[in-house]
Amino acid sequence: MRYLVTGGSGFIGSHLVEALLERGDRVLVLDDHSTGSTRNLAHLGERDDLEIAHGSVCDQLVVDEACEHVDRVVHLAAAVGVKRILERQVNSIITNLHGTEVVLRAAHAHGRLPVFYASTSEVYGKLEQVPFREDLDSVLGSSALHRWSYACSKLMDEFLALAYHRERALPVVIARFFNVTGPRQSPHYGMVLPRFCEAALAGAPLEVHGDGQQSRCFLHVADAVAAILALIDAPKAIGEVINIGSSEEVTITQLAQRVIATADSGSTIASIPYAKAFPSGGFEDMRRRVPDVTKLARLTGWKQRLDLASTIAESLRWCRAQRGAAAADPR
Image (cartoon, rainbow, N blue to C red; front, side, top):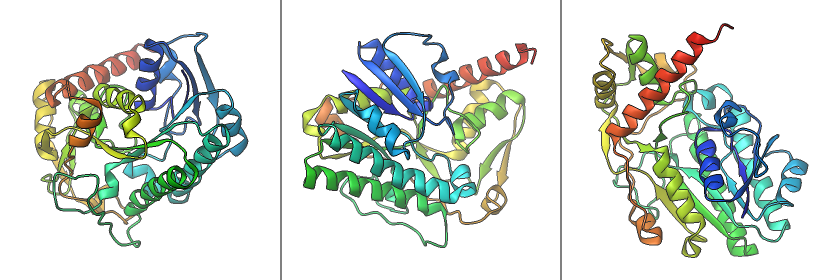
């Protein structure tokens, strides 16, 4: 198959591109490199089955031309990271809303290409009923808190994708990712595990926002990619919304402690109030974020392979390798 992967130079995207190529598919990557990097795909070298195009999913002509030459679309491109979303508010909303509209329209125009759309666990908002099941309500905060604009824009993208499916027979699959992490994830946009790994290896304090008792479930990117591949090959997943995540819950303080122990680091933990971590304001956190992945398992047979200990260890190895490479670079 020939795939268009938007955001294919990003963290999840680069791992997916690797997996598609390994199984014999051809891939066209479209990425504006606002958060992704060509370095994430550099190890693949020059090859006939991979094309990398620099461009935005908001560019209708670029996306339309890309869809002429593929059989399927995996739409991963989006504004990512709480820090970036708070700092670049207009751009984040436009990228999520308009970019998805452009992709869906082009996929429909070119023979109703099947589309996999990457949504987020953020759409559940402040829901307190855990684990989060796909048919539960979303509970979003006030529009005065810009933090919720990301969740709202991704939820609107879901509505639009499902409308294209129901009204125009476009085959779509929507996946809600829960804290996917691992090698190649950048610490620069507020992602917690790579931020902790970088601090632990530097012997610096690990900054835990708030009281540190908020909990998350971290999924290794390899397991997330396995779920994506399973879903795009599952006819029963068309028209469905499916959670992708881990069932291993951990508080952020516990995560920091485990990173320090695994790294054998002398780092300490520093509690940082939200107001100091996000001085621009507009931030509000949720206490727990736990997915119900029953539907994913039922539709595809998917099972999580890598636990949190493995994920932390691999993230530290990758971070250590990056630090070594940077130290060896004479520039």
